[in-house]
Image (cartoon, rainbow, N blue to C red; front, side):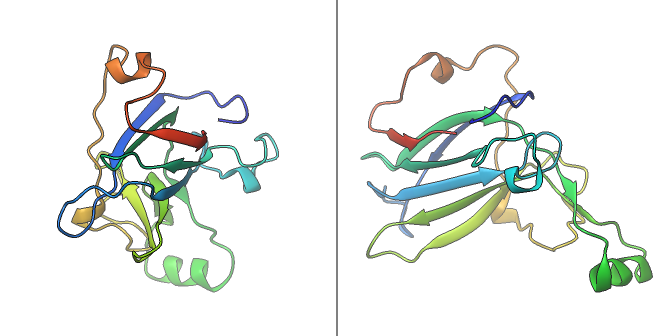
Length: 163
């Protein structure tokens, strides 16, 4: 995080693997998400530049991790043709909460995707039809501090620009 962004903590522990499930070491993982008020930093003058964005390198086991704050879903713009079409179809403008990722390593296809929270009320009716079963994350609520949060870093991982 680059500016004071209050919200519920979000701890992400993920792994980069190839099609056969083999870990990919040294993959660059760019991550970004909206704030707890549903705005990206470039939409919100209250947030510092590049807030809630980070770049990580996967470890030997393909893992990377970071801590941030939980995002929420947000409405897309209702101005113009898109708003007119949504109103004509009696559809809501909401995107479910999601975390963006861009994963890059020479020799592999670039992956740009999103991970969605299955508990979002708009998960079944995403206005952009972006949610698929494979993109739904495993969000687990911890009422006590997650053990990995007490560690300064997990073995085999490194952060280049933490959020």
